Length: 303
Image (cartoon, rainbow, N blue to C red):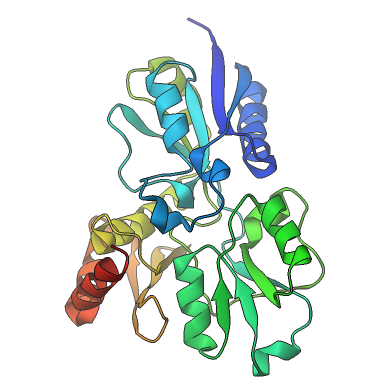
């Protein structure tokens, strides 16, 4: 059996770049594909912070529905936007090789770092970590796709805005006026792309599996299991990064209070032969170290 694999994607420039990468890889393997762009709720509603919208997987839900309805065969996502639990009937098909994991600050000069400053980001994780390091600064909400956010930075008097390096690099939008935020722990699965597929679609499952990068998959699974155990269904300022060096996996994770004043961190390494349950174990240590109380406070504030 052969068929045209319909690739569902958001219609932003970055999402289309990612979908086209998957399209090219599949076609290089001999498959026939077509793109099906869909506008997500997360792209349409730009005047509210993400956590206020109360929708799980706001950037992925529209594509989930399209897949369940049979309008698309696979969907391509920035993996950090994907809920840790996929909808019934939709499974992980492949995790592509990871790009740059860092957050960067696009700025209009760095003299503000030692005085009052205004930074823009729509991420609770970035906001909390920035305020932890720069408690005297103000952080304002910034929403939209990367092009929209870059334009908003130019149009406002903010000192800078925080972006994922991978997104700007993929569409060649990374400017000269940026610095790497090496001290900021990235979002779980930041820099990774996920292809999801219908559980019953054997043809697409076989095709997509050929794109999988095992090392990236192992790392992001640890990060996302850490996130899932900590969150309990609540959006929270959580960072996690797993990297593999030789036969060892190194993990760094953190949970912050919304205002950045509280921080609970963990750093561990483990042989890659013993990864089963490791992300949950790290989360349990954070919860036992005060994370359970902090998560309860976060849930109360975000109600």
